[in-house]
Length: 216
Image (cartoon, one colour):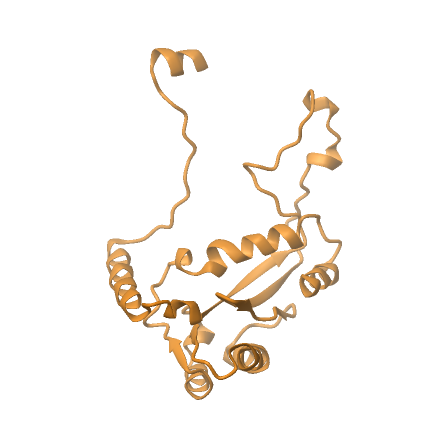
């Protein structure tokens, strides 16, 4: 079959690709907002942007479906403990907040189980207790820009008022293109690196996962 497909039909085998589903309206708005942001951050000023995001990490082992492989003469010779990823229906997990800029990163904020990130938790536990002291130490009075997505707690009036008083410049949720994970390095790069390192092996419980996150 492979010979027929390759030699007789001249065809190649391609994998399915996952792409973000965007409506025509979303595509147009995304394009327009990206043009505005592109003009706004020129001459290297984009390097002062602090990109932020939240991520749920589980206790299970992280692996690459394409590249994580086991070398063996045959399937029977592979121990099930080596190449078997055990899954459960209700995985223990932890919500993590983090931010990154061109020359540094904030400490990770671990949200306890059952705590919803509403406007009060977001402002007090994340912005006031984590972002503000880090930014003061990192930028030492220099200008910087804060970015966040359009989560409800981010768009709240309480959050907007805090940002006006404590952040030199902010990319508002109205300015940031929606459904654009490929624009935030936290989404398309940092989280996957952190997850592959922290979850290289499965954790027994959330306490173990949190300990690894604090060390990492």
